Structure formats: structure tokens, C-alpha cells
Length: 453
Image 1 (cartoon, one colour):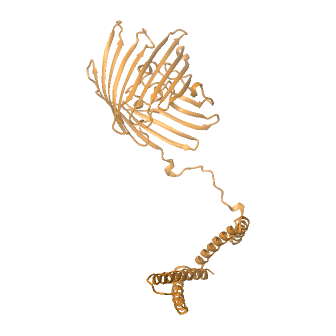
Image 2 (spheres, helix red, strand yellow; image 1 turned 90 degrees about the horizontal axis):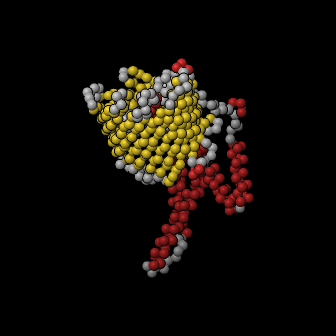
Image 3 (cartoon, helix red, strand yellow; image 1 turned 90 degrees about the vertical axis):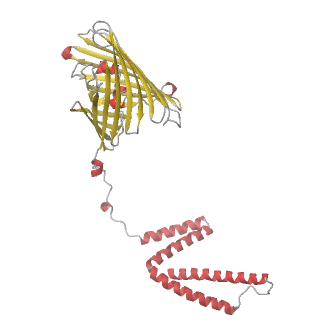
């Protein structure tokens, strides 16, 4: 049946072509002034038909070699289906629907019977990962400084501050883990190691392990990610060189409502072992931290952040009760369409810390203000002003100014030139001046480039 349809179509096309050619020749002769008829003589038509039959026989032979009967039958069925659809549309929507149902019924009749339901393989829940997915993402960050001090002498002028190894991986669709090791002074230390669960009820996020705590803004950042080469003096004085790090559990969520002016609220709650060597004097009892962040989008180029922190813990071994209250603010300007070339960020934090030994102790205060201006796609200018009262001894404050220039060679490498001018109280009641110059080079390899945390 398929061959007959093909034969008919080809014959029709050839006949129409021959008639069109004959008509064109007749019209051309009439234009030249010769009186001819537009119809070809009968003997001419018979010759044309004989020639077309010969060509058709040749085409059939070629088709027989190129396609088997099954393929032609399938083509014929599709052709008849299309023709039936066209005819049905011409007859109206009802007739077309009946023809379509008839075609579907014929297809179902020719389809093989489905296998029994109990033999159909059901998709299984993914309970394991392939070998490639089991490989964690590994990154390495190096932080090296060339330093000079005044007054001298100059010692350890090349400071291999830190080499950090980051190991991160998704555990499953619901959780992931991060582990950070650091090599400092020839010793390997576990800087952070925690697992995170997302998508919990109430849009909460849970972290469990060892992590840098959400004290203000910069304490959470890794050292190589802060805008200067060192943490602010207030963090050094109240929480030590590494800042506040704890072993415990942390919860994070956002408020289900907006505040005045469309503010978005973030809430952090953390319970950790109060083992910080400074504020908790190496204790081992629970400590609790609550942090609230509030964000406002002032305009398409500017957003404002305001936060507050409360920290409390005890160390019965030395009859110590410690509490810290803090506030932080940040404003960032990034012009739309030019965010790669221009930006400005101003931030500040202030803390009041109290250590009460035997119920007695006074609150000391400290804080900083800093700003960073992006001059071009690679160049940043920054400065910070520190001021802090020591936790112990006289209340004479330490203060410092820290200007710097940072040039990003690429997203993997940056170079920073920095000057720190400090004013320190002395035991004699006077003040001393110190200057510290540093050229810092930070590089990173792996998928995570200079993560802040």
C-alpha cells in the first residue's frame, strides 16, 4: 500500500511538471506571433506518459533498495494519519475528534501489553552517591607578610602567618559540612569543623560543631578575609588573637515579618562551651550568644545594616561571670551597572565587656570605625580607627589608625600594603608610639576563593 501511494504522488508531480512546461512553451510561441493551441496533441501526451512510467519504474527499484517494506509501511501510516487529520478538520471539530480517537484506539490495539504492575521497577530513593560526588572540595589559602617595626629591632620580618586548608562537601540534599585546618607556627590546628542542616521547620538553619561565632560582623570572618591584615583591637583585647570561637550548636532564622521601612530581620542563637582564654578565662561551662541583624535597602545602590549582640557565660573555677553587649552598623554603596568598578563600605562595631570575679568588676568599652573605597576593578583604599579599654588594669585606652591599599591581581591573589600606627599606655602612666609596616600577599587555590567564612 505504501509503494502505491508513493507511485501515485511521484506520477502526479511529474505530470503536473510536464503540463506546466508544455503550457509555458505554448504561451511563448503565441507571444512570437505564431498561432498555436495551448493543449498538446494526444500522441504527445502518450509519449510523455510512457516516459513517466519508465522513470517511475526506475524510482521504485531505487526505493526498494533503500527502504524495506516495514519503513514504508510506517511512513504510509503516518501519511494516512496526517491526511485523516486534515480531512477531519475540514469536516469539523466533531469529526476530527472522532478520527483522532479512532487513531488512538488503533495504536493501543497494536501496542504490546504492559508488564504486570508488580514487575515495574520503581525509582529508588538515592541513598548513596557515586565516587565523583564523594570527593570533597579542597581549597588552600596562603597568607604571608613582609613586615618592619619602629622602634626596632627587626625580627621575623617574613611572617608565614597562616596556611589554611578548607575541606567542604554536601553530605546529602539536606546537609553539608565544612572543615578548616590551619598551619601556624609549625603546628596544625583545627580552626573550624561543623555540619549545617537547612530547610528545617520555621525556615531554620542548624550548625553543629566548632565554628567562629556571630559576634558582630568581622569576628565571623576568617583572618585572610577581613578588610585589614588584623582583626580590630577590640576583638584582640576582649577575645584573643583568634577572636571568639566555640564548640556547640547554632540556630539561624529570619523573622516572618518586615520591620519599619521594609526591614529584614535575621536572628542567631548559639550555645557553646565557654572556653575562650580571655573573656571566660579558659572555662568549660556553657555560654550563650544572641545576635540580631536588621537590613534596609535604602535605594537601588545603597543598603544599611544594624545589628546587636549579647554574650553571657560563667567559669565557676575562678568565680567568674562574663557578659558582653555590642552593636554593629554597616552601610554599603554599589552603583547599579558599575559594581565591578566602584563601591564604598563603612562599618563600625562597639562593645561593652564586663568580667566579674566574685561579683565585682566594671564594664570596659571598645570599638572601631572603618571604611573601604573601591577606586577601580582591582584597587581598594581603606582605613580603620581603633579605640579600646583593656579588660584589666587602668582604663587608659589603646588606639590605632590603620590605612592600607589593596590590589587584586586576580580573584585568586591580592597584595596589600598597610601601615599601623598605635598608641599604647605604659606602666609609668605615659604613652608609647609604635609603627608597623606590612606587605601582605594572600593567594588561594581550589574552588573556594578567599571565603570570608
